[in-house]
Length: 434
Ligand code: ASP
Figure 1 (cartoon, rainbow, N blue to C red):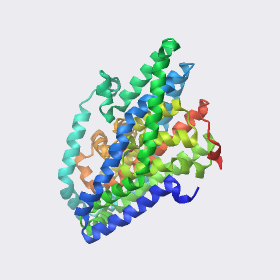
Figure 2 (figure 1 turned 60 degrees about the vertical axis):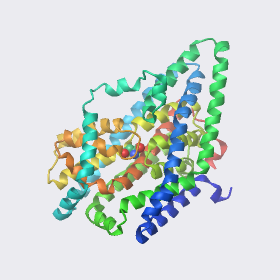
Figure 3 (figure 1 turned 120 degrees about the horizontal axis):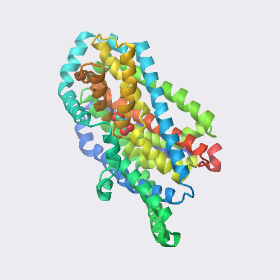
Figure 4 (figure 1 turned 135 degrees about the horizontal axis):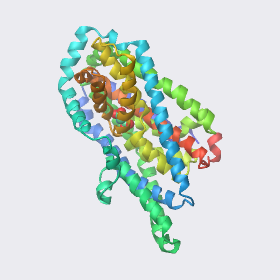
């Protein structure tokens, strides 16, 4: 196949063109044009992806569970999945803490820069803090209550209720197994046909991916620069080292943990693996939302890596909601960075508190743009660092959100491949090793 027909190259090209166009737009003052005439294409593209997410999870999980001969497999897969998700997230936080303690980016921010950032972003920081306050009022078992829907259509009506959808689909699938086959056959046939239709829809939507990605990246750049390219340089002057610390942590996690897991626990060569999940990573980067990327993550894992229907439709939606290694790592770096700018030295006990709260916070972070920084407020409060400190990092949060979301999605695919393989649920297509 010619290289330019491959999806990941098309998306990558769109990304580069979007970056170049975004820089031109900021330089020549076309940001208004870009907002009115280009950004909407990005929004439409994300809406389309969200549109297929619930039907895709529902149909493929019902079919996956209904085709199980043995329900024990579901619980063994569930145990492994949650264990590995939590384990990799804890490692990610530790890497983040190591990096930020070695680089000490907070010591490099000049006082004048700090005051200016605090003044510029105070309003936005207050909005995020009050959002965090609402989250904090919830009891410890609230996430458990929230995972169980009280109304099927209520659960299906909001993409943020993905865990409810997973729960409903498993419940329906289990009931289907227990009703005689001759009765359930028509139902299974309908759901099966629906699933094929939704998969075709995902393929059709992905034809528009290059346009969507171009629009999203242009929008991200013009929003970041706010029509004033000088502002980006100012931000980088103050926050460049912090930015690099997060990027270094994310890279370390991907190179050491994920590459190691792919190499030792899956049959894939790294290059083939990246080509297979590349479209999902690029889309995560462009949309900053693991939730919106989910349909593509599922399709790539099934078609290119050969993950079974059952494993992909169970492990991936769960991952999109609770497994956020990139977010957790970023939260650890950001919390210590803010403490450093306040000249607060966090002791070992406080750093351990960051590990536990960041683990819980990343689980509770919604799979949407900018959710990570809201949960960061809760971590800051746990270690008694002033929450208004998030004003310092808001200016560069969007590009970091893009990067951490790409890492979140990569983590989901790696754990899915490992769990699927260990459960005999991985049948790679012949070209997966080419
Ligand atoms: N945007 C991230 C995601 O969807 C969450 C975050 O803000 O860290 O995975």
